[in-house]
Structures are given as C-alpha cells and as structure tokens.
Length: 253
Length: 207
Image (cartoon, rainbow over all chains, first blue to last red; front, side, top):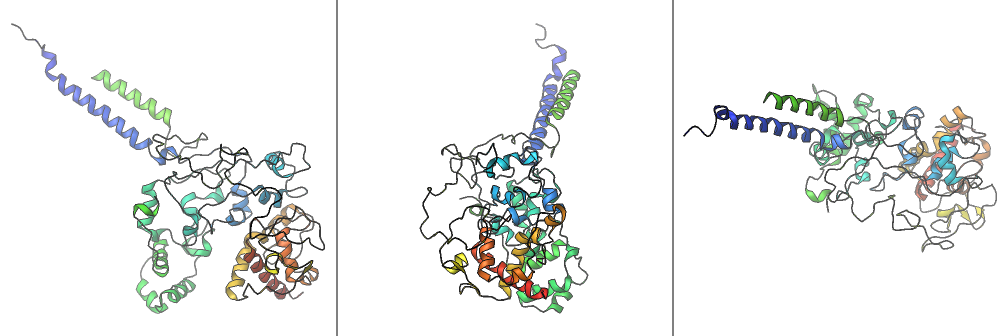
C-alpha cells in the first residue's frame, strides 16, 4: 500500500497556517486603521446650503464665535444661528445682500423676494456624538475648554470639516489629563491663543487670588519649569477644582 | 504560496487605494459600521423631524397666543421697526425699557451696576455690537469699515448719549432702521449690561 498523501503535503498544513496568519493580520490591520472615528468621521466636509466661510467671519473679521453660537455658554447644545442672525448683516441694503450664495437666506427671510418661502435654512450637522452620549457645551466652555480643542481651527477653515475624532477614548484622554487643554475663560473663543499670550504676573495673581497661596510661593515652586499649556492648565485645574468625571454616568444615562 | 502572497499584495494595494488614508476630506455622511443606538427615536435640539409637518423638532407657539409669563411689549413711540415686534417676558420696565408708551431712564432695580456687571457688558458688547459699531462704539466696526453699511450709528454721538437707558435697551431688543432685533440672541439681563457698558463708553468718550 503506497502513501495516501504525496510528498508535497508534508508542508501543506504549515503553508495554510502561514497564509491564514498573513490574511488575518491584513484584515485586522485594515479594521484597526479604518473602522475607527479617526477614519470614518475625521475629514467629513459636507456641502452646506450656503457656503458660509468661517475663515472669513471668525478669522479675518475677528467675529466672536458667540455672535452666532449665542447660547453655547448656557446650553448643552451649541446653537446654529437662526436666519435672523445672518440677516442682521446680510439683509437688504447690507453686506453682499444680492450675492447668489445667499439665495437660501433670502428665501427664508426676505418677504419681498419672489422666491420667499419662510422655510429655515437646512444646515448640515457635522459634529455629532451618538444619541446615547450626552455632551454639554456649557460646562466645557465655562471651565476653560476652548472650542478649538474639539473642533480644530475653525477660524482657518473656509469649509468646516470634522477635525477631531470625538471618540470615547479621545474624550477620556482629556478627562484623565485635563491640564493640557485648560485655558483662561476669557480666551475660550480665541482659537489662536497660546501660552505666550498670557501675562505671567497677571496669571499668578489670579491663581493666588483663587487658591489663597502667595504669588511668590507659586513663582518659586514653578521656577525652572517650562512655561507651557500643561503648567498653566495644572494651575487652573487646581484653582477651579476641576475634576472631570470618568465614570460611565458622566456621559451616558 | 507565492501566488497567494501576490494576490494578497494586490488586494492590500487595491483596498488602500479604494478606502483612502485617514483624515481625507469627504462629503458623504460618515460611514457607520455598527450604528447600534447612535440614532434613537428621541430628538436633540435643532434636529430635523419627520413627525411634524414642518419637519422641525422645535415647536412654535400657536399663532396669536402668548405663552404664560410672557407679554406683548408696547409699541415704540418712534423709530421704524425692521421686523415685527416679538413678545417679551413681561411688560415691566426691566423687560421692555418702557413705562407705558414712554422710554424710561435709569436702570431697573433688577440689575445691580457693579464692576462685574460692567465687565459682562463689555464682553457682550464685543461679541454682539463691535462688528458694526466698533469696539469704542464710534460706528467704525469691521463690517462698517469694509462694506460701508449706510450710516451705522455712532454710539458716542451726543444724539445717542442723550438717549435714556430704556431707549437703548429697547433698540437692542427690537433693532432700528437697518439694525436687526437682538432679543433672540441676547438675554434681557445682558442687554442691560450692554446698556450699562455703553453708558460707560459714552462717559469715557468725552463727547
């Protein structure tokens, strides 16, 4: 009786294992790379009904974010402005009021316009957390977390796109180490802010007033440390008693 | 095996080519692998709704009605309104800037003028008023400068300085001429804070 299995089958099992291993590695690598919000959400840049240019309004003109997103400090939801707010500057006889780009605005607002419908402008939502997560804008901006930390440099975007992943692990990064994102509250809407814009004496006086320590002690303990966001944030965290929650119920109900 | 790896390499290249790198701009709604409970039947603010005929989640009061605790303000005794009068939270001085049909002067007792209040007014002035009226209130804001909107009011002009506080509050609330109403964006108390800060600007202007 001859061999049932010819000689070449000796290594068949090993070869199959190697091939399966390579295939499995590739599948995992693809999933790892492209099944996360970094891949699926970052870069989302939908076309809006009006090509509103944030880099012009918030960047060049220097308008405050809160001119339009007026209730971000009071509400969990950062409101998209009503057409009335656009109308304040782009109404009849005002800035670029006859631009064809503003067609949906005229339809919504101008009662004398032939295509007037009164229908609101249907802006496309870009940043969205899942319905089971509850993000509150007001608690963040009132504790020195700037718009830029989650939305990126909106003031440099002609067309707004999803810049940060907004995933759970990404949220937790900051909730575990909030000092790297905290800044003085009046600089929250200044997206271009950096630690060099902060007057050190004023800052230490503010921290001293909050914590009851003396300015000299604070400066002495910081001597030799690098003046950076982390140092500023650590002081602010202590002064404001910031303890971002990390339990499930913080964001999920 | 050689063939297998060749095919695998081609598949990898094809996949990477088709899916693109991270952070690449795209305009279609994001792909959701497991939508699970990402989209629930409940609605969040300003979301569209297929339930109501107008397609919106937010409901408006029935036409011709005023919600409890709100009241129609009185018509102003001067000025052309750029939009219809909206209802306010009440018809007292604090909410309207008026006593009956007349603008009141001075600040209502609900607000306390102190440093904090003025600082709040300054911040709000810079957010909502500066783009047109300028940081100092001289009517030379960035919008007026570049687009020359026909006469943006110079707020440190004697004409405006002579205005009673109630009239300034009323103007912020309902707008005037080309200026739109800001009652929907600036809460009542902040409007008084802006009024207070404007009074300080006017005093500082020396006019």
